[in-house]
Length: 214
Length: 191
Figure 1 (cartoon, each protein chain N blue to C red):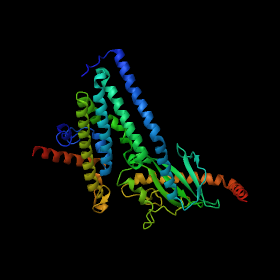
Figure 2 (figure 1 turned 45 degrees about the horizontal axis):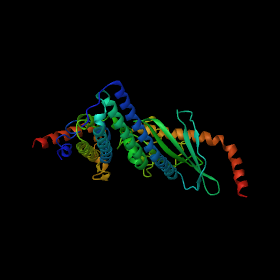
Figure 3 (figure 1 turned 180 degrees about the vertical axis):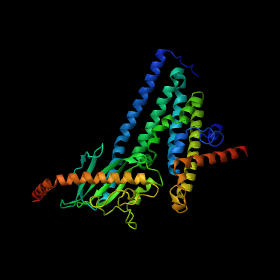
């Protein structure tokens, strides 16, 4: 066995340089290999979420990122169209920072009239068995007080009933429920502002598509 | 062989050495999370032990710890990227705890206490034994908590969920379950 190298300045410098150099080189290599796969996995998860929250659609429009009035990060809107170019709904990737463990993201689908067509919790760290139930809790057809599917956040009070709202919170997970509804409200407000602002231009866009088809 | 088996019972990192408590308590809310975390740590342990024992004579004593940490961090990042690419759902549920393997005392502890003094082969075996012991402990703890908390083991329902006591899914339940498991292991060791 080799004798231990002495701890003099040059030796230490060379060793640390070599160690960090090899480490960064190998990480760069691994990153090369996994980058596409990670991108695909994320894109696939997103596509699946969009498809599951919206009614059947034929193609997705260009997504747009909008900074909401009531939050620090932007939301992503994915408008979806049927074969004839009519809007069937918009999926909104929204978030909240008020969860029991902070940040989580939700995909919410809105029909053109503002009713919720579906939702999917994307990433969360909420307590398993409590807050993590939000994936199923708010889509229970047998319990209309907790079901949000088919409701319009512009007409129904999207707060938990404890706070005077119309939605029943998850048992023993009021904080997660509040955060979830916070995310949905943010999605609705952003989507509403956006669609109100583009009503004028939608008619124009319809003309263009018609022109393109003929 | 002794290097391999000691990780399971005699020197089990969780139940006997009480190392790596942070991920132990944090991720074991279900059996599958515990197992995923354990296997990720095992990979890092084996690889770090292997590399450390390989380069041990080339590293001056005074920069030993920073070098080990860089080596460990490299393997952790490899695990993280690979998991993100090919096991996205597990990656999501383990979340923050994957990068935290870097500062897991077991990994640095084995590099420092074992791999830097022993041959390459016995270091690999030690890493594997310790890692699987850790996996075993985390899976057991996760299974116990999942069973008591939500009536499931590995996601399979054993009894209806509302009979479960939520405390076992939450942090206090982790302490209680771990305490009893350590007591049982101690009893078994003495017998």
